[in-house]
Image (cartoon, rainbow, N blue to C red; front, top):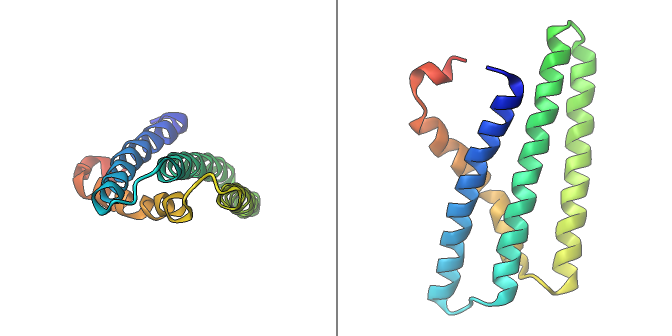
Length: 134
């Protein structure tokens, strides 16, 4: 499968999972009586930042894999390290700015970042055995 298709497919899985998890988070906030516009905005922004972070991580990993296939392992490693550093700095700056602005609830802003691991775990659990070998 084309690496671009894999990147978009994996990002779509994360997007769907984030929508489900953020919706559940908002429901829990509502059940506890803490739901507000700040929580809603925090969930939306946090989920969006998380999906974009995953998308750019997948692009960086795809570029690094292409470099490694052409026997440029050092170049692939450099791409991964630079990508990770840039993504972490950008995510931190965005989340810090929104949290400091008071527009978003800080916990609702950060929780979507934690949802990625469980989403990937559930995705790998339901994935067919033939798809895992690719």
